Image (cartoon, rainbow, N blue to C red; front, side, top):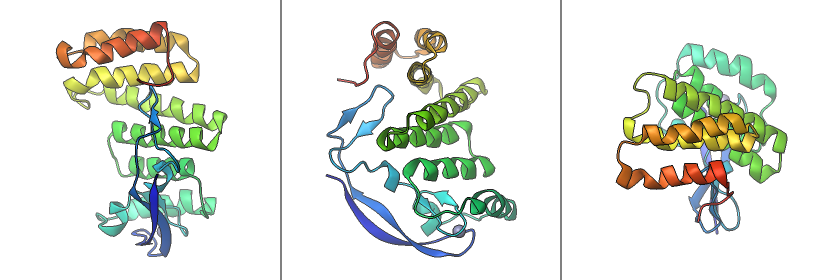
Length: 216
Ligand SMILES: [Zn+2]
C-alpha cells in the first residue's frame, strides 16, 4: 500500500505556510501501462508527489518548497497573475501537475521536463476518470516531447528511441492512428544499441500492430 504523511510547506512565491500530503512509501504492484504509467496497489501516489500553494497556486515538487532556488520577480508575477486567480483550494493531481507544468515553462525548463509534468497530469486524469482532460494533457505532452525530440541535442541519443515510442503511444491513446504509426515506425531508426533497446523496437511493433494496454 501507499503510505502518506502530512508535511508543512512554505511557498517561495507568496510566503504562505500550508499543509500538504506527501508520499512516504509506495509500490508498483498495480502493474505498468504501455505508456509507462506505473500503478500501485491501493492509493495511487502520483497526486501526492506534487504540491500546490493554497494561496497563490505555485506548484512544484517538495524540494522546490523546502530548498527553493531563487524565485525570479517575473516568475512571481506570472504565478500571481495567472495561477492565483484560479482560487487554489484542495486540487486534484491533474490540476497540480498542470500548474507545475506552467511554472516549469515560465522558469525556462527544458521541453522534455514540461512534457513529463503534462504526462503525469494525464496519468492523474486516468485515476480521476476524466477522459476528456486525459486526452487534452496527452496531446500537450506529445507536442512537448516532439518539441524536445526536434530540438538539437535536447534528448541524449540513447534515449531518443524510447521517447519516440512514448510519443507514438501517446498518439495511439489519443486516437490518432496515423501519427501513432509514424512515431512507432521511427523507433528503429533511433536505436543506438540494438542489444539493449530491442525491447523498445518490439514494443513499438506490438503497439503498432496489436496494441496492448499493459506491459507484461
Ligand atoms: Zn504561494
